[in-house]
Length: 301
Image: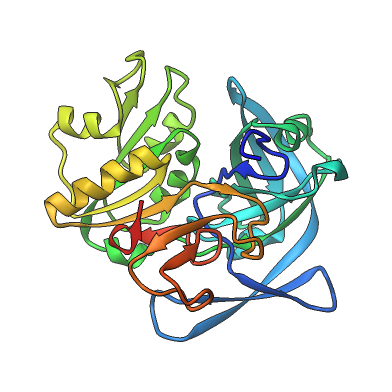
């Protein structure tokens, strides 16, 4: 099943998870309960499935697309949350969860930047301005912004984990060192990120910035931080977790994983945790619901 990318089980392009949901009689309205990081208990938040409109789309790099969507869901969007986007081709079966890259200043539009990985995202890449697009959102628990107040932070992204760093950089209060990694010199979103902090680039082929990965960029530039926010592939997150433990700093990592439903029903995206999960009563958590943003010490990766 893992080989059928973007069909039944596909690589998530999100850095936020879905909240636990209960579908109401009106299928367009969803009430979601999710633990609050600021206080104990549960917050009740309304999710919505709606027909939005594509405002613009362009190819930002080979197979990487940059789309603005007009929707009133932008009014409630937070860094780290995501949308579920429904293909018109019903044979693809499932919506695609894609992270929110940016919120327009008037809070009436959202930006997504995604990689074409299969039929569903391939369909999205053909959308043009004025096309209707079916979405559900906003979903997931975002990054805990309050943790960085007045502190020096690393904002780290790798590959398709770079897009959610943009809105995070816009809203985070503190000194921001943005460390992002790419395969090659197609450093999409670089100019956007440079508006909000000091940007350090790593590329696998050495065509831009440091040759290597984001950890190599930190070492080469002699960077230090008090807290880390990160999204990217698992090897990168493992390295960040180890770095944070070695330097005795807190790290919030957003896990990328294979995912089917995106709303916690299928149990297809489980990670081992230090604490017992209230849903399964074992040391597991669903990345799409309890995460995917975790404090690095909470999860075994």
